Amino acid sequence: MSDVRVGLIGFGTIGTGVVRSFVENRDALNQRLGRTVRLARICDRDIVRGRGVDVSGIDLTTDIEDVLSADDIDIVIELIGGYEPARSFVIRAIENGKHVVTANKALIAKYGEELFALAEQRGVALAFEAAVGGGIPCLKALREGLAANRIESVYGILNGTCNYILTSMERDGSTFDEVLQQAQELGYAEADPTFDIEGVDTAHKLSILSAMAFGTHIRFDDVYTEGVTSISAGDIESARELGYRIKLLGIAKPHGERVEMRVHPCLVPLNAQLAQVWDSYNAVWIRGNFVEDTLYVGRGAGERPTASAVMADVLDIARGLPDCVTHLAAPMAFPQAMRREAETLPVADVEGEYYLRLMVKDEPGVLAAVTEILAYHRISLEALIQKERHKTQAVPIVMTTHNTLEGNLRAAVARISELDSVEGEPLVLHIERFGD
Image 1: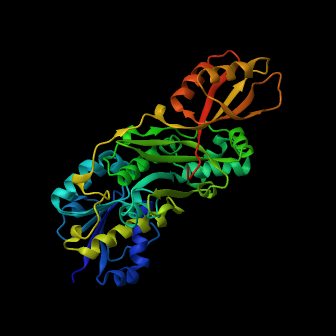
Image 2: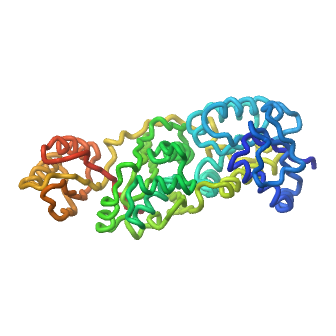
Image 3: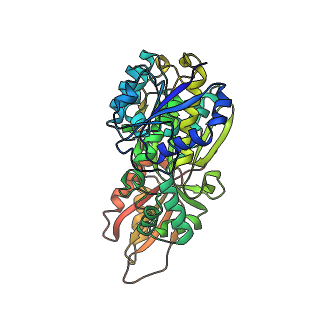
């Protein structure tokens, strides 16, 4: 059987990990396949800088056409990230009959539908396990392992930067800004961390998970998204007093013909398995109607974990060459013709329990005014924490509610924020009780 020849676009952190896998695991890879898979060519703007990995026997080039148009390349790995030029490169590779592996969640979330249709038309594979969860095989679980189930819900801790920040704030009592700076110094956070801390990265991944779970088209722009920048050390302490831990979650559930998709910080019971996922680890919790609850935990980013997922896709494709498409499951778990458009459930229609934190002036009648507004909007309280008095400072009042519609709570909070005694923006967080 002929060699399987791979071309790599992007020789950064993940690209270096992929090269290490080819070099360090060469014999194991070939034994698993029963044939030789080799990295034939690497394209990058900088092929001079050393990466501390052996590239002997691999062609290095700065010309993208040496990968996209070369007759001696079977599989193209795209690891440059972002929307463009990644989208254009992937399209050209597919049009040239190349199978494509990518770790680019932004690309799949934004342009996946276009790329899936083109790949099907051209009869090639488009694989993206590393796009969600890093080294965790959560997409393969949805696509293959849980294929006999109707998926009832998906919860995910999908961003290692945010999980590290929230973990460190709880462990050290530090402020958000202090921990973010530390995360940047350690390389967990980018110099511009906006996509991470504002929840956009998690929304990219959730939109993919949701579409794969429920057989719908990817609708990244419809994901309700909040980040973690408003979380204080006081909120983390109050949550713990109430028996919870704060996590940034991506949540997807079906509601008949509509799908719920939301990303925001949540209070998770301390005894829940997702509450035990620390530091930069990711986790995906999936409930199926036959299998019930399954949980996948591991490194959600980094050179080696992400390279592991990339190489799993390469091996899946290589096993079936030259006609691998016939033996691979559909990229989004459902045949293209069976996937559907679905309305997104407005966040105002989401029903649940909530955590509400207000900063108020320490004066008589404040609590009565707040509870009167909540009662008018048919919101009842489960618990209340009122901190010690400070005559010259605003003091926090923390409340948790019984089940209510988010639209009702948001309307009440809008009125509460207009009270003269309330300072700053109130904080509203969902309480998620797993298994309900």
